[in-house]
Amino acid sequence: MIYHIMEKQQTVFDVIAALGMRFKAYRKAVGLSQQEIRRKTGVALSTISLFENGKGQGLSLSHFCLLLRALDLEMDPAVFIPDAFRSDLAGLWEKQNKSFK
Image 1 (cartoon, rainbow, N blue to C red):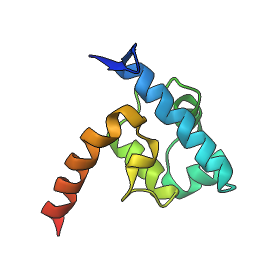
Image 2 (image 1 turned 135 degrees about the vertical axis):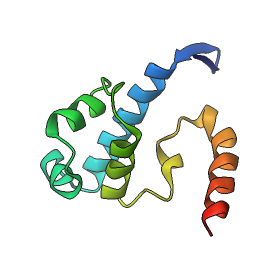
Image 3 (image 1 turned 45 degrees about the vertical axis):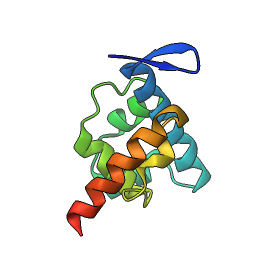
Image 4 (image 1 turned 90 degrees about the vertical axis):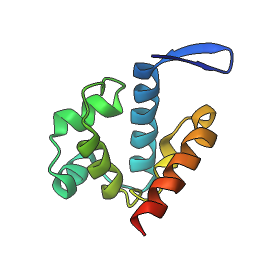
């Protein structure tokens, strides 16, 4: 699947790479190491490293959710969503959250 973002085509892999880099920046900003994330989640260090370095195409949704939870962001994943997708995904996320209440 290809997305048109700001006059540039991006693949799903580009978006996943951006998510990983955002995760890494946020993890560092809150002062957590990869080892601490591993201890909190049980996700392998190699998986965390690959994700943070733009090679996380094989990252499962369950691992992604665990990683978000480790940073206390599981209820607000939009922090990592590229701007061009936020408006579309925000509505979907809001609808999904309402169904659990």
